[in-house]
Amino acid sequence: MPAELPPEKVEACGHMPSCDRNVDSGSHVRAHDCTTKSGVDKLYLHVDMDAFFASVEERDNPALKGRPIAVGGSSDGRKGIVTAANYTARKFGLKAGMTALEAKRRCPQVIFVRLDARKYTYASAQIMDLLEGFSPDVRILSVDEASLEISGVVWRFGAPLAVGQAVKDAIRGRCDLPATVGIARNRLVAKGAAEPSKPNGLRYIVPGSEAAYLAPLPVSKMCGIGPATEAALGKLGFKTLGELAGASEELMKLRFGVLGPWLAQMARGEYAGRMQQDDARGAEEKSMGHERTFAEAVSDRSGLRAWVVALAEMIARRVRTGAMIGRVLTMRLRYSDFDTFSHQSVLPEPTDDEETLILHGWKLLDQCWEKDRPVRLLGLSLGSLTPKGESTTQLNLFVGRQIFRREALYKALDSLKDKFGEKIILRAMGSSKRAGRDFITFGKP
Ligand SMILES: [Mg+2]
Image 1: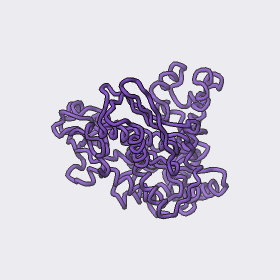
Image 2: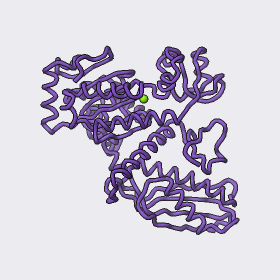
Image 3: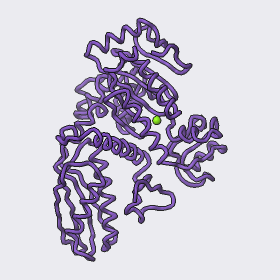
Image 4: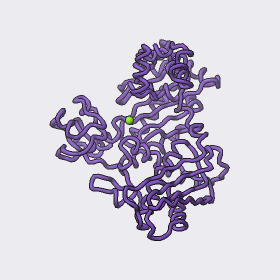
């Protein structure tokens, strides 16, 4: 346990007076020893990197420190979109998703830094690697966010806040980057604890005080409540999570179906929704696929192969999001005269790996496409899906670790795409048509 905490924002919320801003208080430590040893409560730690891309850039170019910077956009601020703004720039209202032009208008002295996806992915992999040392259960949520189950490690550090501080210190020590940490009894509340504590924050929601902590927050602060749900809740008079927490089950069911009661439970901190249920998600989907109708029929092999790559990437991403693996790959092909065929291939083993899907997709294409015949529609789907955890594939430790690395990278890339669109990172392979000056290519050709 650290003898003294650095002068950072260290907060604890809840009823135990000894928790407040004093991680070393003896009674605090005892209280949480009891909590975790009871075996009843689980504890989760949420790590969220502060202004991640911008912080990496600041770290690598100290001349940027303290100055407003925006990652993305052209250096003259005439073109492009801001993908991250540091906290100095945020004071001027700059944020991710804003056009560079608007950013420049709000803050004329802003410095635009070129987006460097490789650098952020590398830093992300370093951080995730380090988190693995803290817990055997690390869930990578995006390029700069992860959720760890820490119930089993709290005793080593003495108290939940001490684990949080150790995680922050480790990230600072290895990567020289600031992170905010939230700790709570479920993953969603832990994320909710981190969010308002940024930047460089640390907050622990004492079990039992979740509802009290969440109550004053606007419903939009709850991960999973988007603008549409926020508006619908607003019409019912629910503006804060406290108001939502008290909603009647009947009303919620009537208005939102099965989701309704869950929303109220989330607002009370009793349910973590999708964040806790990732593994079950998508279990009912037996196949996932995409197809593309071309405005102009495609009749060259390389053009079709490029589309196989694009479709396989989309499928792999969806399958991974649902924590599934699938074994049957189906290609659907429609010629200009509307003749339609579909062909299937059973993969050697269930997978969520896009390179495997691409290679087998190319094989299917060669098997079923009549050379030079113009194709109007191309579809690819992965079927016989099963939840990933149920796979019986045995992996030795070495291969297992390699796959973990690859998965961490995929997750990081997926989240970049979620945030900034499919074209933010393109595989060099097969993407020549789509790749333009503004796009970044990633991966080996
Ligand atoms: Mg972040």
